[in-house]
Length: 389
Image (cartoon, rainbow, N blue to C red; front, side):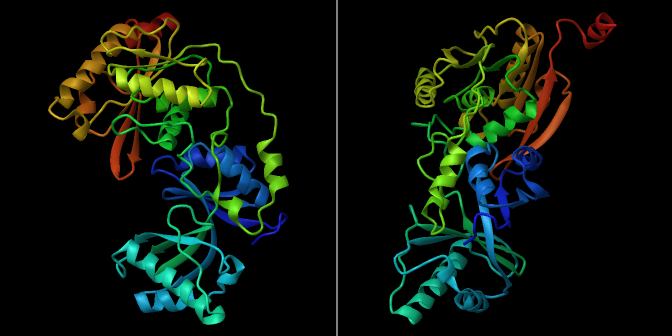
């Protein structure tokens, strides 16, 4: 693997729609040659920046290091190319490994099968050369490989993250369909909020959006609660360099405004409070048991983010009525706030009853969502403009 001074290419994966946000994060970390791809950002790195990216990036799912590219149009060719690559650079007989497959190709149609072919090729190479084959461990391998096939272009990448970076380490349990932490952090960043005003989520579920906002405002790295990253099991892992990265004294910022989540479900709020305690944020945030109708926002304005339940989560409820209810509450109680709604129901969000000032398209996994901003004024927008002049 690399030496500390060697520069190499890395690929940070994210949700579709968050590529620009992730690229901005990488530039803030000092990354160069940053290039945006679909659901990914490519950048130039060294070992220190690789450690730093895993520890600090809020909107990355994984940080991958390409090690081998080739072309293949069938399983035999895939196996042959993988078998002929020298895997002793990264593995030994005592190393456990796993292979994950990502597929977008007319030549292959099963991601698990192509991953299995590469596993077999690697194991067979070691058995042929040494008489022994390394063990496969899909749970917590020493080395996790990612096989990506687009058309006939095949790339094998080392996964420096290990478990997905959305697994921060503070969540004890999730309420029904909890939002992914990476997506939650992306939502907060897209609002432009940085801790300079109130931040509210009146339908918070298990509190993920609120907690990601609080971590951002307090300047707490998202990797702080993680037990381990994938690169810590690599043969060239540098503990002192990693300690320098994680041991930096980052100025923890005071939070001078309200960060509040509320939910009608006592069970959800109980989980949210437990998650806040695990993240040592319980003194920085507040969780209330309240319906959106009963929730009273603090004065002073700020940002409100709503991720209403949709699809199967609302079962027999009417999504159009539900979004209208949210809009009515915004108009009646949230003057001075900028409200953002994430909705997987592209028709129902049209019934909020306010004209969006921004419209963004995001993906929650495969689900296409709308993330709309609504500016809420005490009078009409025209009156507001006249008053300002």
